[in-house]
Image: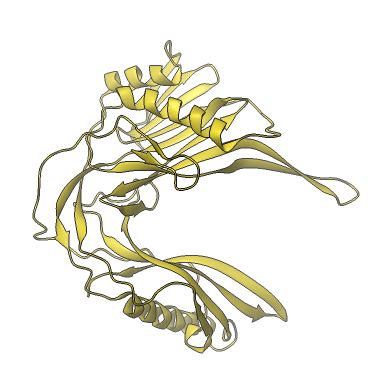
Length: 318
C-alpha cells in the first residue's frame, strides 16, 4: 500500500504477498552500530535544544527476518522487458561483483540481486521547468505497479509514498558570478515499512526519477522480509540520547583534544526506532532495530558559525 500523508489518500500497489511464517527471536546476535565518519563535537558542553518528546514510549517492535533470494538470468531478462528492454543488445554478468547488467540502446538495467535493481536512461540532459506533485505521483505509481506485476518478491513490508522533490540538478556559474540551477529530474520517493516501523539505510527505499513526463531512472529496493516475534525496546529514548552525547563527546576529545568543536548548540529534532539495512553489506539473519536520532550541531570554528546536520543510530536494547 502507498500512503501519502499530504495530498494523496491511499493508492494500492500489488505487493501484499506475505510469507505467512512466524519465527522466534532466538540466537539473535547484537549488530555493530553504523558510525559517523567524523565526530560531532564536545556535546556534553553544548546547549541542548530538544524538539521532540523524550518521554515517548514505543510498543514492542516486530522482528524482521530477511531472506536472500538468488537471481535467475531468465527472470532478469523477463523483468527488463517491463523497463522497455524487450530486445536487449547486451546481457553481462560480472564475475567479480556478481552484478547482472542488461543494455538496449541508451537504456540499462542493473541487478545487484533479485531484490535490488537500478534503471537508467543514458545520453540525455532533460530540463524540468515546472511540474505538479500529482502528475509526478501518477507517472511513478503507474511505472511501479507495472514493475511489481512481474517483480515477484515475497515480503511482509509495505511501500508508502514519502515525498516528491527535485532529484538531479545542474548549476552553471557565469563570468559575472551569477548562478543558474537547472532541474534535470524530479524524484518520487517511497519508504518501506514493517508493521508501521520504518526501514532505514541503503536498500530500504524506492526512488523513481521523472523528466519530460517519463521515467528516466529508478532505484528499486524491496527486501524479502518475514515477520517474526516481538522485541521490547528496553532502552528509553532519553537514555539513547545520553549515550549518543557521551560517545560523540569522547570521540571528539580523542580526535581534536580541546582545540575544536568544544562549544555550541545541539538540536535534536526526532528520535524513532527504525530497522537498519544496507543491501551491499554482509547479509544478516535479522534486521537490527536502532533508535535513529536526527538533528544538527551549531558551533563556532575559526571565527565562523558552522552547522552540521546528522543522523545517528543508538541501541534500543542494552
